[in-house]
Length: 356
Ligand SMILES: N=CN[C@@H](CCC(=O)O)C(=O)O
Ligand SMILES: [Mn+2]
Ligand SMILES: [Mn+2]
Image (cartoon, rainbow, N blue to C red; front, top):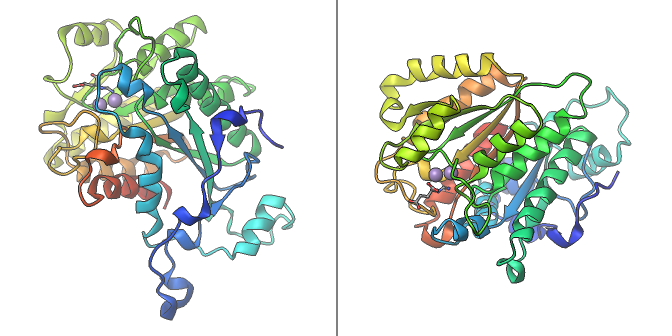
């Protein structure tokens, strides 16, 4: 089934992005991601596996007075992913086609979990950047793509884009929740020094407002607002934001509580958060990491959380809550300010750790 997304806002990924080293002497055991990921030429979603979906958008960052460049995030993440070693079962390309065409009989293969498709990009068109409607339209297109992927039986993994990606990601999962016989409780876990609960200003929603928008949407739909933040910096949020976080009973841990030594407490905090929900949406803002390690972001953090800690969090979620972890995205990678692709490589590792 072709999903009803606005094709004006969607582009397939050129297969040429998926390039890298080839260790031919090792056979398939030497494969990397570029030898396994298959690009979809149309938004005609597969019935299994994971679909990488880019959100080519920095309009929210611009409106939030940030350094633009995050629209280049999805391409930079794909290029960094391309050369990573593949750590799952190998699927022959003909089998990928067959999986998509559903011509393989059920039970004749065990490879469906390993399939990773490149589902192209949702675009916030450059020529229309000054129009609020287009950010909203891009977020809605992303949401519809996500819902369509779930409907077909696959899972989306979203590559941002500014953190305005999160309103689209949430909406996509929420639309899928509304299709369920019993409404699941959705929780959002944001790994970020910022709450991103600013009130939209006169220029509309931005990268600083996504969870304010989620809170409003939830209130309008009489849904509870389960929102937790890991890595909040005292020095990256004003009193107004802390007051709103308290008023909305947002649960959070500070960056100063996220050292490796404090992992047991952090993982217990996560256990308590996840116990209250049925579906988890994980969003990782790349500006949570120290700028010295991850310089390629819109708003760099002076100190931040070490990537090891975030990798531990991902392993914990995968090990204990893979049945609840429905959706993840990575936001705010800005290749314009990157150095030797190191930020893109950190983002790619996070994505790879979430999937393999
Ligand atoms: N996505 C969020 N961005 C931060 C930006 C902070 C800054 O520019 O320093 C925020 O709105 O709080
Ligand atoms: Mn953010
Ligand atoms: Mn942030």
